[in-house]
Length: 335
Image 1 (spheres, rainbow, N blue to C red):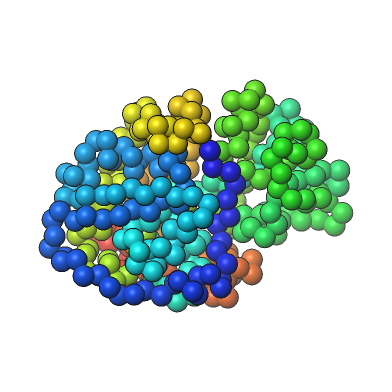
Image 2 (cartoon, rainbow, N blue to C red; image 1 turned 45 degrees about the horizontal axis):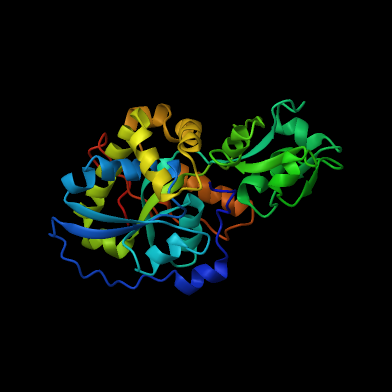
């Protein structure tokens, strides 16, 4: 099961691999496109709709032959897409902005998570009910990586003199009671702890300036320009796959558990339930799953600039294009 992961890539690493090779030689008319999709982690519900699309035969119906490549700690899907080693990848929204600010050309096509999956958790019997209470308590000890954007955004809102103490993220220390609260990936640590009989709560983080898209399907600009219909087909397949998975995740969970034996079907089911609120909301009900807007991308970029994690925000139209099923025209001009 995924542990808490960072969402910002080191700038030096991005500069090494962020250039688009422009080598997209596949014919645009190829109706049986053979493509590779690089995940940014091992098979788990975060990718449930992808495996559901494969199970349901949606990729084949769209004329696509898709190889789903599992990720790991040592694999950087943004850099692999940017370098042209794969055609599509799953990445964090903030990674798109940071890489493109360094000269890369990633283009987001579908945002599975409409809201950031990173959070602060406390024990179920904790006296804290809000982040403000936690941040202001000098007796509180919070396990968190203070370099992360999500922490910085919370700290900007609630920081006080002589407030909570922030120490290194350490899940066993939180479990043992040595930390009052801990960072988490909503579908990971709280699920694994619940299966151990240790219940937790997520402290609400609504109203903050930083709420990133996550689990984002991306390609590179040269591939989109050369193969727009393949990209459209991938978006259609993602929307169908995710709609089916949200309706009944059992088949995809079984497949992913076979591919990732470290995560049981029970854990898959709990994780799938926890992520629903991140995927489906009033906006996607209107526009379709995976929907993105320039306003949201702009807000993400400006928030990262304000937090000192970007020097300047890329123009939103340069980092995404939306041509989902419920919108007949592109939200972005894709330039």
